[in-house]
Image (cartoon, rainbow, N blue to C red; front, side):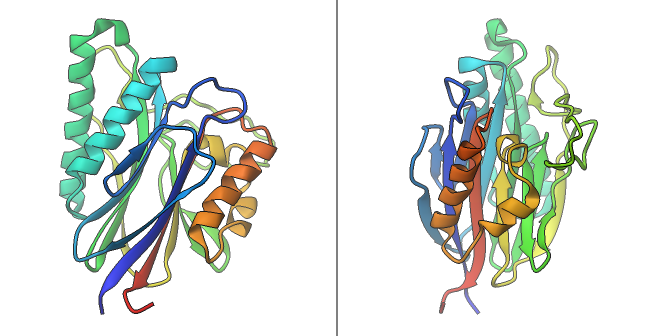
Length: 251
């Protein structure tokens, strides 16, 4: 059985921010541009596949620069689904970001979160650093696979609880080099499995039930529907969505 993935991605500055500090990558495509339509992708899993959503911190150009470095760096380095390989890629990109900070002291505090999916042949892995999230769509709705590196790792939109944005770890974000340990989850590469990668601008604005209800057969339309719903609710942050579905090549 030959496997492939279908994917769709979109990123937007939201309704308040003047610029987009998020970065999305799917395969070799990387974007920080505010988009009105999602891009669609197909990728055969006889070759490695990766998708990343990175959420920059540091304000204006600094956050944009950090998330772009992280998004591009991970997309370039993620050629295996093995946990050790993913950890090595994450740490290497973190070191690259700190090298930028050493060369440009005016960028002190620049950092980024990241959540990603890597797949190759019959193997699939989810990883994250920070509070960008990965979900898997199931019969009962969305199940969070990532682990928030925050003081409230199980925070959910719609509960009325205030969410802490203090991060326990991220790429960069500190004045001196700090190593990071990504959370890695191995998943069966099962046909029909559908995954959502997103920044906090989406899950702070929509409940998990609202997000699940908008994910249908057409991933491009689903990504656009998720963004549209977040904008209609006046998303205060940038909004980035990547949807990935495993399929057989005969489908």
